[in-house]
Image (cartoon, rainbow, N blue to C red; front, side):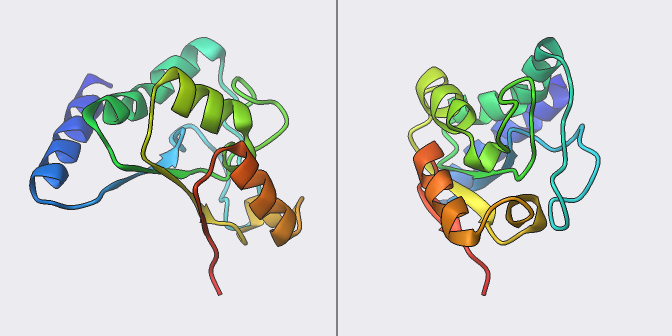
Length: 141
């Protein structure tokens, strides 16, 4: 994990030095998921302790000044048992913005992907995402 964190933070620094706006994705991480958010809702069902390690690269990128984060259409029961990250106030606002101090742009992935629309109408998902803490909704035509 240390190597991942080192590469991630150096990439953020390099993008900033080059004047690029980088986006970290898919927050809070898809590495332990099974399934494809394009067609359904993946679940990362790991313990709270394992989740700390899972989150570490994103936490380091936030500390390094990443200007944008893209959400994952994935359920993380250790963080929110009800909603996928894209629609989760505890994940986007409480954790990312308040606890970690992220003040950049939070964007969703395409809100019409299966991981979202299998449960919500597009309009309702957009409202839930904004209320959860998203600043920008990606909507593919």
